Amino acid sequence: MERFDGRVAVVTGGAGGIGRALGERFARAGMKVVLADLDSEPLGRAVDEMRATGHSVIGVETDVSERASVEALADRAYDEYGAIHVCCNNAGVGAGAEGKVWDHTDNDWGWGLSVNLWGVIHGIQAFVPRMLDGGDDGHVVNTSSSNGGIAPLTSTAIYASTKAAVTTLSEVLWGQLRSVDAKIGVSVLYPGPKVLRTGLLESASKRPDRWQNETPRATPFTTIASFEARMRASGIEPDYTPVESVAEEAFAGIRENRFWILPASDRTDGKIRARAASLLDRSEPTYLEDL
Image 1 (cartoon, rainbow, N blue to C red):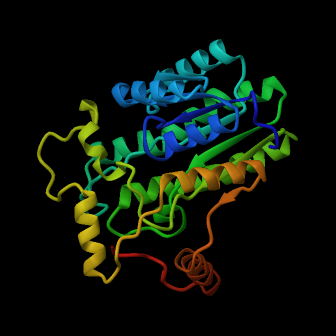
Image 2 (tube, one colour):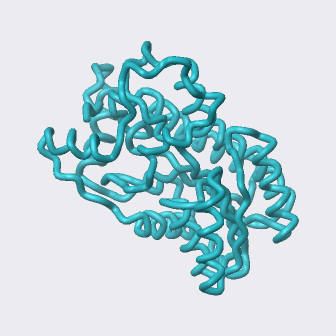
């Protein structure tokens, strides 16, 4: 996708973190922007601040775990701007909890799957058919993570599983759009390799009532402070990637029609090689991380 000025982008999880950085990068390229988020207060603040700098932007309160809510987002976006050219399925939760696969409750799994996986599915269902009908070129970006999409942290079963699913879903979407000669590109975004301050690990504070557990968890929710402490205990000093640089990399990936939006790093590339070697050798996994 080469032309951006005057075109339209929608970004879920757009009130802060990577989502807001994506929205701001698209706006600087001359795009009209639709920010979607479940949290209305920071969403309104993001919209006001972007409008104050002269950008065309609207905010739509959206629960990506509900298809009807995402369909309403699409209706609002098309009513306002008439088209969508870039769809970023970016909203996500850390699912926050550590623990064994067999110890997580159905509500733990339900919350993580409903946002991190179903949120992407709902975005594809709501926007891709309309983008195809429009006949214009466009792009879909699905946010995965190196902690699942490439090599999972063994302590984060839910998050890792959902992000691995997003990677595979994106590959399938790419192949299916290619099979019908669509002018819509697909990318899967890996925001790593460094830690990001996005609020992801604190998302448990906004966990909906329908996904709450009846009894307190046996293991605590992860916080950025506890994650940093564990990194330091493992001899790794936390090093943060600005969300703006992630947005810049994503923008370049869309412009260049790259499927894998994954900055090169020795750590990430090592995990990729280790996983490929394990598959080819039919050996035990050696690419898992225990942080």
